Image (tube, rainbow, N blue to C red; front, side):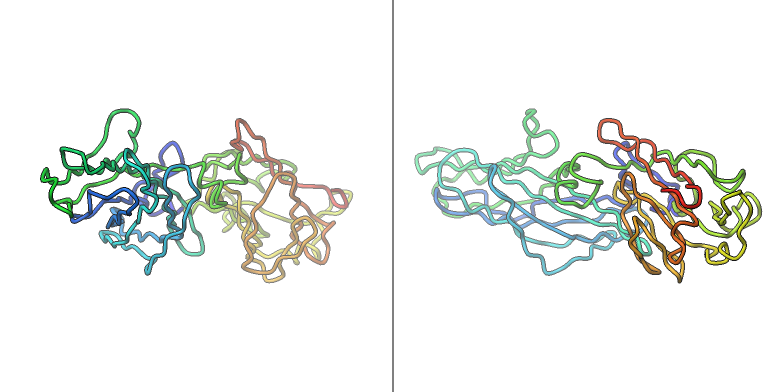
Length: 343
C-alpha cells in the first residue's frame, strides 16, 4: 500500500510478501488418532513473519470437512504483531467412517496502513486418516498444503502402539498456506465482483484535461500509492497535486468563481484490494452518479461511474470512469474529463 516504506515489492498476484507473510502450524500435542464417529481437535497457531514490523489482522476464520459448508470459527483475538504467533483450535467433527477425511481451513487476513486496508485470504488443506480398530499400525494425520494431490504430503504419525487410547504428535508441523483468490472475491474481500478485479499495475489513462494538468498514462507510481486530484497545480508544475481540476465555460474560458469551489486536494484515487477506490478529501464533498458524499467517505468505483466534484454544480465538471477488462482483469482505466453540461 505504501511503497515509500518498502519500494512496492509485489508478487505476480499483487501480494506484498514483505508486509504479508503469515505461517500456520499444527502445534505439538495434536491428536493423531480418532475413533469412527468421534472428532479431532487440532491445536494450531497462526504466526506473522513480516520483516518490516507490519501487524496482520485476522478478519475471518472458517473450516469445513470435505465439500461441506464453511463453518465460521471463533477467535478471541484479532491482531497479530510481527514475530508473534497466537493459538486457536480447529475441530473436525464429521468423522463418521474409516479412511481419509479432508479438512480445510480458510483464513482472511488484513494489512492496514493509515485509512487503507488490503485484504487477503489463504487456505490450508488437511487430510485425516481414520482407521478402524482392526488396524495393525498407528493412525496418522496427513497434512497436505500447496502440493496436496501431487504426492507431497507432510505426516504427523501417532505412536505405533495400537493399544494406546490417546496418540499425540510430539512436535509442531508447518502447514503450507495457499493464496485463495477465488475465495477472496467470493467473500467480497477483493475485486470488483466474483469474476473481475483491478490489478495494482492497471494503467490509468487520462483524456480531456488541459496540457500538463494530468500525469502521463500508466500505473500509479506515487510514493504513497495515491493520485491526488484537485485545484492544486501538479507536482511537475511546482504544486502539491497529481491531477489539476479547474472549471471552464462552454466556450473554453476559465470559470474562476466555480473553480474556487474545488478544493486544492479534492479527492484521491488509489487501488486497494483489487478495486479502484475514491476517497473524498474536500470539505464540500462531491457526487458519484448523482449521489453526494462528504469528506472522508470512501467509494468503490465501477465501470461507467461519473464523478462530479462540485456538489452544488454537478454539470460544471465531470469525470467518466471506464474499465477495459481482459480475462476478468481491468488492465486499463480511462478517466475522461466531460465537457460542461454533458454526461
